[in-house]
Length: 435
Ligand SMILES: *[C@@H]1O[C@H](CO)[C@@H](O)[C@H](O)[C@H]1NC(C)=O
Ligand SMILES: *[C@@H]1O[C@H](CO)[C@@H](O)[C@H](O)[C@H]1NC(C)=O
Ligand SMILES: *[C@@H]1O[C@H](CO)[C@@H](O)[C@H](O)[C@H]1NC(C)=O
Ligand SMILES: *[C@@H]1O[C@H](CO)[C@@H](O)[C@H](O)[C@H]1NC(C)=O
Ligand SMILES: *[C@@H]1O[C@H](CO)[C@@H](O)[C@H](O)[C@H]1NC(C)=O
Image (tube, rainbow, N blue to C red):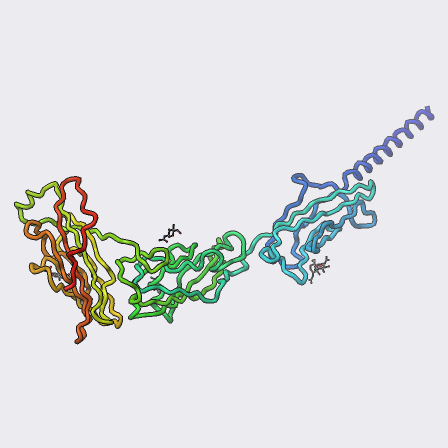
């Protein structure tokens, strides 16, 4: 009985010992594994330019003990390119090592991520597990836009119509560049008020801020102003408006004298940056005769009046000039009295005020030419029955004693169109003669 008891005692002791041993072995087997669920790699973000010593990973959560009198695991860093990461193996903490340098996400360094392995050696079993740590470097808006040139320059003819794009020199990589990423690196262009050139911000505009194309917003006049200093600001598009960074440049716009151009139509749409204008057709409407009899006669028909202007060569060296060669305009019955038919804009090299006059061809004063502005308006309804063509001689004079002027012959040809009939394409020019 005593023997039996003794045997039983030894058996239980043995069982307990075996259990403890098994447990210890099992624990050793677990060492170096992650004490967390989720993906095997540890992924953490960090802002670029973070200070040295910034904690990257607070605790790797690797099973086992690396320090103390009886360590079960041994931790070290592998693939630690350029030593960006420091490991405290006891605390299982990773720090940023930016001693003497800056972690820069932007060119030329362009460090967008750091990948290291935390190697764990199981001291009891001898196995090795590598734990990957991915450090994602986040962009900060730490760079301002930089203009590629200190100054920009463009020359613009004074006759350039309002609305024309006069400068595209910020396109491509020729404008401002911001090496930050995403919106922090996207550029917008805005014209700023220039206290030393107060009209520059209203004369020019950048309607499409991302393209930076500069558009003419007000007419230029070489005689009044020959140069503009346009301050252009580039800003990035950081989400937080307060964090946006800017820089400015000066766009110098030189106004060229329109006199060195040949005759042209207004508005002049330049052909591919040449000095030639695209052919233009002017269109306007003229009312039909007010005579009630006439009105009934012409009803559901339409009346077409064609206007031609020919500009004659100068009779002297420096007269005012009409830029146009000729006009053609078709009119219908809808036009009101007082409506403007043409803008007979002449240019004077000396900047003298110009006087416009209908010299000949309109004895009934059907047309009303503004002496100072050159606007030709309808003064009376047209009477198709009495006159179906007008040849007006218009002069632009600079009012000097020597009486320099350009002459302009202008012809109105009125045609009654039947339904579906097209106006003539080529009226011929043999009637446009100098006087
Ligand atoms: C950088 O940070 C590490 C980790 O905290 C630290 O050991 C080291 O002394 C720091 N270097 C400097 C120059 O402060
Ligand atoms: C920290 O980085 C510097 C510069 O690369 C390097 O010289 C130094 O050895 C690194 N320090 C540690 C603790 O890795
Ligand atoms: C030009 O700048 C002035 C001063 O900031 C401002 O008052 C004015 O509205 C600006 N003009 C245009 C057209 O933006
Ligand atoms: C203008 O440029 C366009 C596109 O570059 C071209 O197709 C066209 O022939 C050019 N016109 C003239 C008159 O040079
Ligand atoms: C001609 O135009 C001017 C300015 O628009 C106007 O004051 C005048 O009344 C017009 N004359 C006639 C006859 O229509």
